[in-house]
Length: 422
Image (cartoon, rainbow, N blue to C red):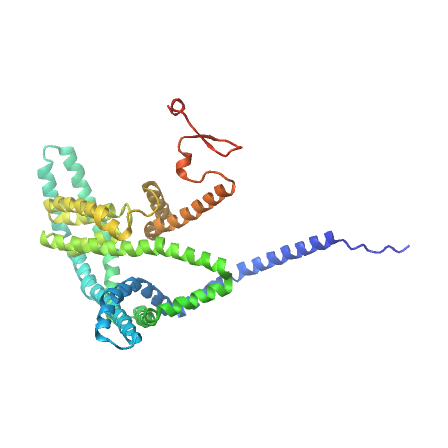
């Protein structure tokens, strides 16, 4: 007797599942196999579009300045110049002038960097290396006079200075100076990658002019696309996420850059007044390292103090005292004014994020560790609060201070008594 095959949905389900798993494995294998080619393709695409990436970055950095100039300076001026005329002419004048002045400021900073600061930095480093034997001899004499009653300390410091002279300055001569020399010569000679960088910068500035001139139009197009693809709820979540990222991440970086520029300028003015040696070099070191939260002032003060110490130990002490005062002013007045009173996490997590970021990504990890950690911390915090609310549990952190238990029926918190706390 002939038996007929009985169709069962269970077999169909497992067959489709096995097929999808096999297809996923094959696709994953192909993706891994073609990953290098895909990476090259993405890299080439990024290289082609790099002028537009520069333009977006320049637009983002200049946007706050452009907005401030437009609202506070050129809009009132335009209202006076275009009395009784169309409002469109007044607004276009204010926007165009704000964009123009912002781009001029950017170009002025670039010119100052490449034609004023970098050559002086290079000459200062060359002078330090050339005069290093004299500096070490003077510093050794000062150590001998200061610690002549403590021969063991004197011998230790003298050996340490000798090691600095033989190791550090050999590295500067063999590695640092040739690298700086090649950078300066490449900038002046105009080799291929410098030309490409200049090209990207010029096209990026042109792109930024278009973006800043019609920033409302680009923003409206982005919102329109988001609402069409993700709907109202999804688009609103994306906008909230981007706004929070901008406020936390990029706002922190922009604020830190402005804060460090102010600190570097103050440091240079004071060092010039006090006739400190290598004032520009020391100020640049202080400004750059000040970008790093928490550890930045210490990182910048150490090499700067050593540079001044080789020339004048007394001025090095004055510089240390000045840096302490400057960092107190920055931490209590300048920094909070620019960055706000708080970044949303306490000092422990700031230190944790900097150390973790430095261990994973060195300098960039130290620089970006805090804002990235703030984003991660906020996402986790929101998820915890959402979960607690869903389970009808208290969600404020203060509710869990001195917590003994939570009643499973009423969901009320039971606090520890005074005896239990002791």
